Length: 74
Image 1 (cartoon, rainbow, N blue to C red):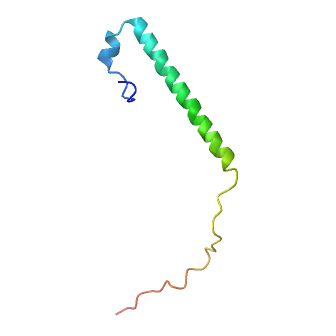
Image 2 (image 1 turned 30 degrees about the vertical axis):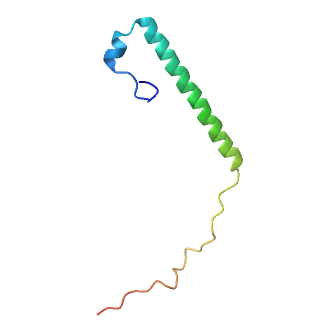
Image 3 (image 1 turned 180 degrees about the horizontal axis):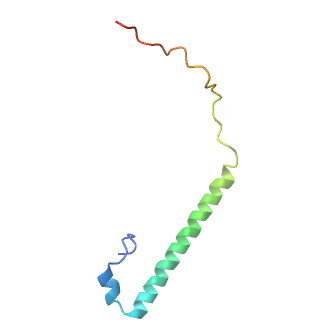
């Protein structure tokens, strides 16, 4: 049930023996910590790869394009 990230329902956790509850909690905690480390590694790799700014076209916003025209009034 956990691997689908659905977690456990209240009744299941309540009826678990305490030792199993603690063990399960620790395993879930380890899983999320490992997942968080992997995400941080990926983010750092992306930051290091793309140290430059994204190049964008140089468009002057002061003047509208020439093809913009008003519709004739009838």
